[in-house]
View (cartoon, rainbow, N blue to C red):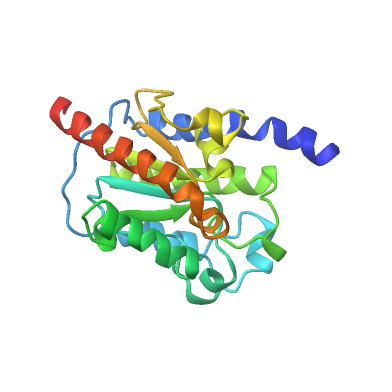
Length: 225
């Protein structure tokens, strides 16, 4: 129960830290950026990060990968065993499904999206992230959002959604709408984690509806920018 109580305040605190980091950088409004190569310092700094105890149990950190000018940023919960071994996000079966969603469903290349997680290091045994771990990693995600400036963030799964939206809730309550908590953050669309879709194939239809909403939201954002 103590863990549940601590976690209940995590999304609000994490969202405040995320938004605060963007405001501190002077980015009160995200604008389009079409730089071709990302600053190497962020990924390198994440790989060297020792802000929490996960640095003692990981094989390596997993900063994320993709285009610095990506229209879509996909954010999951944390790396798994295969990601911990490779240093790349979403490389297992769930990663292959995510690639199909991006390339077959959205009509773009995986390399043209940006893919990362709330946590940059694998929690032991793939347990849920602890509050101090997400607090340590939130500035890294904030910096990645600053650099990529996506038109839409797609939260993969409940944990990523609660973190980004700053509140608890069911995935069903978050789906089907575009969330905009602050002008310094792009719209957030919530859908199922690919690992869930592998266990529950019937949910793929709902996921496709979410992806269509994300593409529609990105087109609207592009027209307004």
